[in-house]
Image (tube, rainbow, N blue to C red):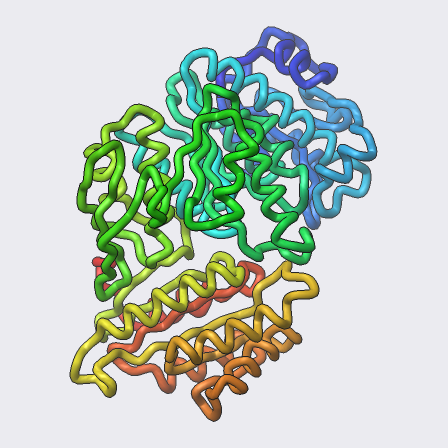
Length: 500
């Protein structure tokens, strides 16, 4: 964060100083909500948690080096105390367990602080890039950050830090030296993305797709499209909107912005277009990119055909930021996964390949992961039965699908059979898990081809007993299912090779 005095901070967030001897003392470090990570010069955020309240750790944070605390009430150490927020804002910003609204008040103040800092940095040359979509936000954000790195210092969120806390928290990581701030924007309903764009107004906005993630909260794809389009609607006339030409709902967002529109995809009208697509034995794409009147070969290091659209978006962002086509292609070809548990492909010493995509799941991302799985299996050893490696899909439930949950899970089970996945293990006891398993059974998979087990331990027992050298195993579910433990176990069962 840029250096600010406590008096400046209080004026920005609309707070009052308590127990502060010298208002001219400056915060020279970061803004941090975990007291265990406080360093000298930081500002500590007093936020409520599941079992504890950040206000209770204020004294410890100051003792560890924090200059002051951003709080909703006095804490007997130097603090900027912010006022309560309205009932409407509280509903929009309230954290889980935020029983007295303290968290909403601190979050609202954090947003005001981030906006003030971003405005100053933009005036000094910072470019803010926003990415949204139903699937692929984090992977694309990581690609964009790596493609922009040759042009100057980049700040991007760790993992999927993309909500009312993660968005301003990441923005405040930017300093006077930062040239690019790359942010992903999530939403649980209409208006959420618009609110995030107020915190850090983007000049470049990319929309990847409109799928069924969070369908239970939005109600329909049309409402999801309306919400995702809030990003391009927030762009200035001097900005750039990067839209997926292959998704009609995204392409239609061109009418919602006065910014310059750049279409990406495989469609004939795409400005940044992919042709001649091929996948290798690890589902890494090779293709020709057409952009700015040039045609260049691209060979991705990340896995899955769905990464083509993500890479095209990253290239388009780089071009909008001043990169040449040659430099953008070179950078995206060298980019790797940067966030944990997302299409992390590792091959053990015995030839078993583990595809750890366990961070999150929705119908679109599961379909993409299953297609990558069978691509890897079909490119396997010719001495195996059917000329391919045996494929396993270890799947858990997909969350936040509302009334469509059973239908969507059923569809994934049926797709696994249609794609000829050899073994399906469904983990869970709820209706969605049952629907996923039954979809596979009714599509034509029975016996031990498709099994449903109650928990991770039961799944590991089957895998440890039946997995064979050369098999390919996909592990995927919503993050709350914790299926990363399955991937970690499989990878630790045999020494993985360094190469991915």
